[in-house]
Structures are given as C-alpha cells and as structure tokens.
Length: 485
Image (cartoon, rainbow, N blue to C red):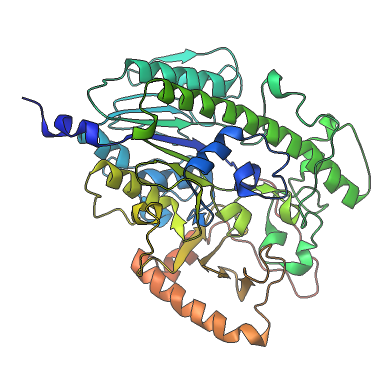
C-alpha cells in the first residue's frame, strides 16, 4: 500500500531552488537596468519571460550567512541569532528543507552553503566549506568524505546536481538546492567567457561619482567598500591596481577605471551561471518534468555595481537590500508577469512548503508568496519590511514601505529618509525637509508596530550594535574611516 505522500507525489511539484551569491538584479537582462544590453543572461531572461519577476523582494540583513539562515528558517536574523558571517543554525531551528524531507520529498543541496554546520535533515548534499573556490572546488558529503573536482566551480556543481537528479527516487517529488558561489567577489570566470566585453566601455551607473560625504554622512559615507575614495579602507581601485591596464591619480578617473574592471569580471561570472541554469532547465525539459517543477532563481542579497561609489552590500539602500526573484511554474504562474508587492527572504521557505502541500511551522515569520504568484491582490498584504544590519559600521536599522524608506542609527538621533517614487536612486536624504515631517512620523509609528510584530526591541538593537559601533564625528572635524577588519 502506498503511503499518502507517495500517492500524492504526482500532484505535488518538484522544486528547484537556484541561489547565487551577490547577484545584483541589475545584472539580469530581464530587470532592464542600465546594463540590460550588456548582461548575458538569456536563460534567466527566459525564466522571467515564462514566469513572474518580482521587483521588491528584500532581505532583512544584507550579508551572506545571515540571509541564508533567514531563508532556511523563515525567520529574521534577531530570531536565528545569525547576525554576522560564519553563523550556525541551532538543531531546534525550523528548516523548510527538513519539512520537505519529512513529508515525502527527495531532497538534496549542492554548492555553497556558507554556514558553519553542514545541512541537517537533508536526504543528500555536496557542499563547500565556507566560501569555496572558483576553480577546483572541494565538496563535502554527509558521510564526512570530501572530493576535489577539477575545473570551474559552476560547471562542477551543476554536474553533481544533474548526476543526483538522474539517480533520485523518481517515485517521490524532488527538492534540489543549487547554490552558486558566483558572482561573489573576486568574480572569477571560465576561459570561455574571457573575451566578453573585452575592450568595450560599459556605461556607468548614474551615481558612480556621488559625493556620499555630503549626501549621506551616517550611511553611505561610512560604508567600507568604495570604488575609489581616499578615506576608504577598501577602495576597489587600490585593491586591484596590479590588474588594471589604466592608471590614474585623478579620483574620478580612478572610480571609472575600477568600475570598468569590476563590471567586466562580474558580467563574465554571471554568464557562466546562466550557462549552468540552462543545463538544468534542459535536463528537466528532456525528462518531461519541466512544467511540473517549481523553479526559483534568486540571490542571497543584492550588490553594489558602482552605485554610490560602492561595491559589496550590507546597507538598506535599494541595490543591496533587494534580491532578484524569478519564479517559473506554468500551472499557476502566468508567463511574463511582474510583481512589485513587498516580499522577503523569510517568505521563500513558506512559499515552497505551500506549493508542496506541507504545513508551514508556526515559528516561521515569513508568509507564502503563492497568492502573488497567482496574480491575486491580497488586501492584507504587508505594508513594510523591517531591516537591521549588525556586522560592522555603518550599523543601522529601518523600514521600507512601498515607496519610502526610514533609516535609524545606533550612534545618533539623526535619521535618513528617502522618497523612492521621486528619487529611485536614493541620492537625496529628505529627512530635514519640512514637507516630509508627517511622513517620517508616520513611518516611525509603522516601524514601532512592525518591531513589536517581529519581536525586536530598540534595546536589543543598541546592545547588538554596541561592540563595533562607529563613534560620531566631532563637530567640524573630518571623519576618519575605521581600519579594515
């Protein structure tokens, strides 16, 4: 006699969850940024054309390990305790992958896991320890063994994933996580993409040369990783100067040179990811199971591609906060649709469990995005997302509503406030403008209520942002950047 979940297997979708690291949505053609004619993402663009593309899905803490912990558990960073890199999940923490494993899914995780302990309660895995390498990666297995693979990481991860798919228990629906290392810095790429944009000048983002000291002294100006800023401890230009063909002593030229170097590497690295997404797509198609597979493509957070004179992530500003999120499932998701409602990384697990017909654990704080994927318009959908970043200066917290954003800091009563409808690139902090006083008060009230709902207090934020907090600049004295850590 078949178990209930076996009898229902044909009715439940397979799930393919593909996640890259630091893949800015601006570097996907379907997102139509200033790079749309320069990115090479035909497969990702096809997924978007055949499914739904979300434009306002956000992480709650824009740093790799904490975001991944939130995705697995469906909980905010202050609940998981994963506030910084090299975090570990507790055995009692919820896991949507464990729920799938316990409810009839054949489960596997391949690639970059990026938390201290390896996946728990997963049918199979082959994952890297920590960051892993771009070339000749080593994958660790449940039995404690490890094996080194020759070649480019994305190709080898995908080889492993395809091998597992071919040998899986086909009496069960499957869940497969395929986690790419790229395009995390240092954006390495395989030889086949070495000529992409060679000798070609790629357009610059409009805020590459923004004076962040003037526009945002408590947030942008305190970020560690600039393209070039003489005060920054991690300017991209100086970090990679030995690789640069052009040299300059002019700050503006240095930013432009650094940007051209970074963006070429980034786009080549992304092209190799797209290659391998295509390989898995074509396998599902050849097996006749493509349309019965819920395919999700995302990243653990966004990434600065030169905007505001930055690389890296961490801040609540749009390019770092927002994640690409593309879903293909033709049984419920209309092709070519775009959704601008507010979603979060804590929603990913509940969404997959919902499609799988598995009860979402009550301790998960996220909600299923399935109504949005069905193009429904829920009246009680979230009005704001809460964000907090703890790892290093500039530590901050705030909320993003549909069109505005309020940002607080632990070391000052000053706030930043952005009107995203009028200022989508967030170049003008309007906190000091009288016209926005009521909006700021309203957002302060929304944030207080939202903090109660998600279970966090101002005292918790101050305590956990205390040890490494930035000291405010002395009046009339030019701020010095902290030493690199």
